[in-house]
Image 1 (tube, rainbow, N blue to C red):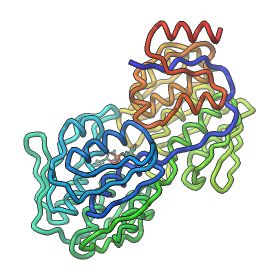
Image 2 (cartoon, rainbow, N blue to C red; image 1 turned 90 degrees about the vertical axis):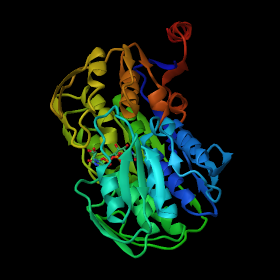
Image 3 (spheres, rainbow, N blue to C red; image 1 turned 45 degrees about the horizontal axis):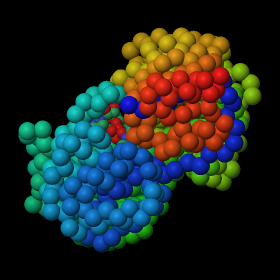
Image 4 (cartoon, rainbow, N blue to C red; image 1 turned 60 degrees about the horizontal axis):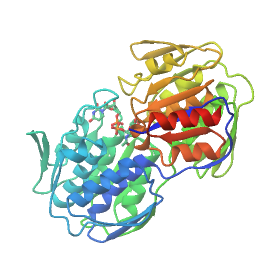
Amino acid sequence: MEQYVIKGGIPLVGEVEIGGAKNAALAILAASVMTDETVTIENLPNVRDINVLLGAMEGIGAKIDRIDAHTVKVNGSMIKELCVEYEYIKKIRASYYLLGALLGKYNHAEVALPGGCDIGSRPIDLHLKGFRALGADVRIQHGLITAQADHLHGTHVYMDKVSVGATINIMMAASMADGKTIIENAAKEPHVVDVANFLNSMGARIRGAGTDVIRIVGVERLHGTEYSIIPDQIEAGTFMFAAAATRGDVTVKNVIPKHLEATSAKLIEVGCEVEEFDDAVRVVCSRPMRHTQVTTLPYPGFPTDMQPQMSVILGIAQGTSTVTESIFENRFRYVDELTRMGANIKVESNIAIINGVEGYTGARVNAPDLRAGAALVIAGLSAEGITIVDDIYYIERGYEDFEKKLSELGAQIEKVSSEKEIQKFTLKVG
Ligand code: UD1
């Protein structure tokens, strides 16, 4: 089991390059099998979730050529198997994007039902409602979701709740249905737009992505394309918050500043300076931070995937802050770990009440999930003394070269896999 060991208290200074958006890449990879022609995808993040999905795609017969760490060629003409095994879906829920992709292309798909998740119950009823509205017969039997249609037809779907996954899954299947589909109350996240742009570059006819009404005119066939994935707004936000927590000065490069507006706004509220450039943002934090209120909301609201990182900086901001989680019910599992580092946080229902403390003190903590794991690393970077973050497996699901990028900003952090290595690091940093 690998861990991060961190000697905190060093302001991060310098420049960091952000990779492609994991959540866009997952959907785009799944959609790439919807044509029999070859698709080239660039700016792919080299993270565990992506590699698991590529495995699932190979498992159904897609040909995957890894050109380099960030470029892949996919050819879906040899797909024979329309069933995605539980082995993949248990590792990565987003394999369910293959449901929309295969249903659209072949009118049939079988994907294992995703199991429970670490951030709360995550139903997929809206995905299934959309597939049914498109004319598919959808059944759940023996742990498998089977969707089958004679032919898919355009439809009108109202999403009862704003869902990124359901919007994308329905958009994929509807791209190859007969006639026109309208998705109302659609998710507006940048990666929904990226997936729509990708499908359009394959010949799909999708309009309105990025607004709450998406209109799709189904096409008979999609063709090959070359596409570069947008930058990851959550990776970018994580480095911006790491700069704030360590009172640093970091320029986060290769980003779309528009996608970071909610994150930037909160940093400014707590007293940091955020400077925007065409494709970079610079965060400088030279004063003590002050309290604020945050509620997670669908885009353009404050992202739930930045909620734990936000709590970490509010934990050392002056005064009492509140963080309200409105998307996932169980996203405060890191609070106990942060308390071990000296935080003063009380969770009542979906609200964390945070009384800022002077600073964190290093401790041994567990990463409970991907984003909370990254947040604990940020806490460790700002803490006095040594922090050990266990279960970094979760962090590696979504952050490429996390410790390397942080080291380049001056952090003292190492990936280790034994007590001996921890001791060696401790002796080295003194
Ligand atoms: C995606 C992101 C995840 C992010 C989340 C919210 C990927 C791979 N993951 O997850 O990192 O935290 O968006 O921005 O892109 N819901 C239902 N029924 C459904 C589907 C969702 O009730 O059929 C609910 C969920 O329980 C949740 C809310 O809708 O409360 C939003 O979830 P959704 O946007 O679907 O999240 P994901 O697509 O799973």
